[in-house]
Length: 471
Image (cartoon, rainbow, N blue to C red; front, side, top):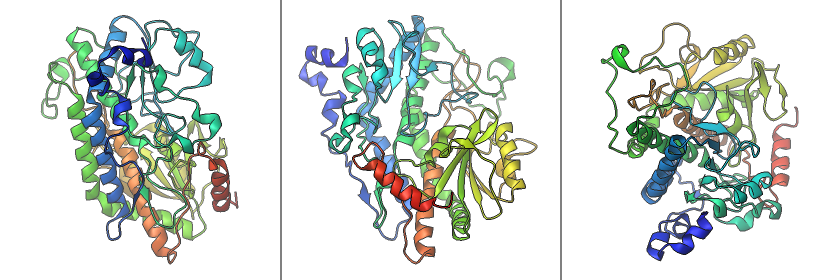
């Protein structure tokens, strides 16, 4: 029975727990006008913590229900599908992803989806609306700005607005997402900046995954875990750096949330490095060069490519089938020069694919900054690492591996590295805005609206073409 039918059978007091009721609660959803005298990076990080705290305080029951549904689906032999996007990228689930249990199949393939399966998604597509309506698939949903689900849907283009996921959802997690998305309105900028979906998506995901695995372990079920972490079972445990197995009777989502909030808080301890990275980027811009933002997968690269509430002066690069790919031009990237810089986003300090492109950037004479983890099991690996060899690095607060060792699972699960990479990147973008203003005498960089907004495509073309006229 889908949500729209289930609510009819529930008492009003219980229905009040659902996402519909929380739409009217007191969480401030409009973009906040930036304050003078406080670094934009710190203002943004504080707003992120407020939004995440709202989700934890009002949506924990739905998140836990989602965790139990995932575990129940696995236990009964069903398949868990996911399109849990972060507004512009996939949410922290990638090949070889350290700390990711093999729970999900990416996408929704109608010819393979069966009754009893589960779908974790933040968007609805016309190609499978009828399929969801006709099959007994358990849907865990949350609003995406590319739909009629978030607050202020009247701002969305008519041809997009009628796409709504919540009528199909068995569990609806209300994030108070808005159709424009940015948390900060900086006077003089073309759109609000500082998106939230890139951080709330993975936080909610790992909260549910952590407890789903705990629930499965209580029932004697374990799953393989992706990545290259050494096994943490039996006599191979290094007890000098391993804090023990989690209790299977205690929920893990609060533990994960608390660690994320702590790590976001200590990004401020690396503001010196973040300012140096922003200065490097601004030097490139002022000298006629480009600001490239690389990640092996879509995370940083996607957020640097015409991202809603993102800057128009950044260009995303990623790996595609062993080639360095220009995300906006959708072609192989063979450029780069001494006036350019690249900000590399890392989920491992020594990933060989990342290292290959690091060497390419260095050969081209580009300045290189690194964001993300520099450690494995809290120790820097021997040999070459990108944080060690880059010109500047920020990201001391997170580790390559997951947080939780669960009995039966051979590696720890639920990493924070993807969440922290997102926040380090946007803290750097906030600092870049300030340095842009200071070094140009008061000019402001352009920022993008969502192309799903009315007039959004025209807005995108105007500001992208002005900033990339020489390409």
